[in-house]
Amino acid sequence: MEEFILKSEFIELNKLLKLLGIAETGGHANTMITEGEVLLNNIAEFQKRKKIRENDIIKVGHFVVKIVSGE
Image 1 (cartoon, rainbow, N blue to C red):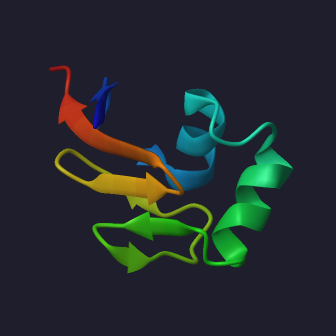
Image 2: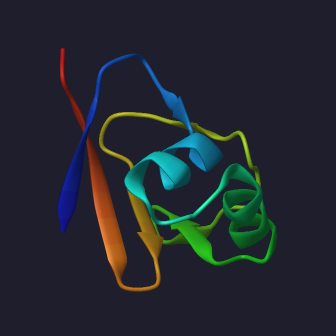
């Protein structure tokens, strides 16, 4: 499991996927989300701009990322 250090209160899900390199573009991230490929805390998440916060866990295929606070 990888960790992503959150430097603010939250990050939007589609931006996180692009930043981590899981999605090639913002459009690709949006498609992955709407097609149910992204799990947030083991539940399929369909909101593209869902606010991801500390202690959330994102799963996409074999990628697993835990969000940790950088503050």
